[in-house]
Length: 298
Ligand code: NAD
Image (cartoon, rainbow, N blue to C red):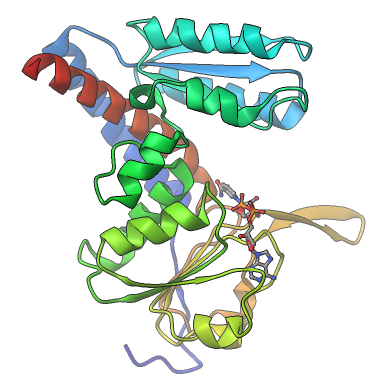
């Protein structure tokens, strides 16, 4: 894997990969509809009128329908009480047409996101945030796993192949939604794991040891060229809006222009981002398959 300074890192095209994944999901949905006589359905709950969340939810709904699934959308007023929201979650838990439930975060401040997430039936928890799903992943028996690290894992395997055994993976960030589950997925794939976070003393040196470097810190340009080993695969999860003269633009956590000696790198935008919604639908399909397998063996 000898790389000299004239080598250009391959671009990992998340947009293209997400489109392929959605096409595979659509084909699988068609087959499963015929064999089970049922249709996978995803319920998305949006509380309040945060404009970014509204755009995101609309895009989820469009792609759910395009994949041949049923989409159930619940838009609740910003003043919705905790009890009302929990009541809706309980109703969706019982609804046989709903295989996946997603409550869009962040919630208005008077609502407790943790209580809401833990009220979701873990078998319908397509965000993979329920403690049962976190526990299943941590014990090497994953069921529904968080969408963003799932998408990263798919991009890593698309680049390096299925066998990651023995590779050294360094993850920057230890959040419950990205860093921590990412580390567990890579550990389950028999990588050696290092987790770097805001209190780590020798972050650059540790990152330089990585065969696989996943960065999810939310700090524009944190990872410089000399943090990257020649030939490493770099997955940049960061989404940072920076001011560029009059305009603003989105950049990742990696100084992309300095990463030419990597084997491959995800661009921002167009890398990890497009995979997240595709993985939400992939999880809905997983929930549907698990349900029907359970019913079949019950
Ligand atoms: P978070 O704020 O919950 O966690 C950030 C983590 O980075 C923390 O564990 C912190 O210790 C670590 N960190 C912060 N500064 C650091 C530094 N200087 N050096 C080393 N580590 C540092 O964030 P999150 O929810 O995990 O998201 C991380 C980034 O990924 C954000 O930019 C977010 O917007 C982005 N994101 C993207 C997607 C996607 O679909 N592409 C999904 C989720 C999050």
